[in-house]
Image (cartoon, rainbow, N blue to C red; front, side, top):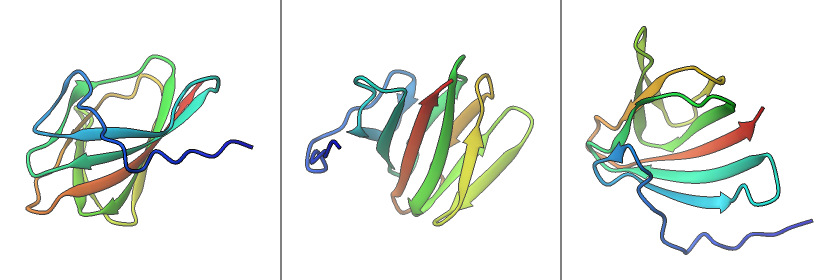
Length: 110
């Protein structure tokens, strides 16, 4: 068993993300094939269109709303909704709402 108590730490804005989006590793990759992050996106915050070669990612919106664009489809998730991106699935994110969006991002290496 391992317990993480890093919820009070400050996160970072990853490369290719913008608008004040902040990501905090709650369960880091260190020594495992998955991670759990809390992502906070203020209005206008998000991530450029990209994909991961060998990662699957689940975005679960805890509060607010987050808009996704895959290049073929555009949709907005509200609190309590989730999406799964498999490896090589392109995705762009942006918070188009007034209130901050808080999401849980679970990443698994295939």
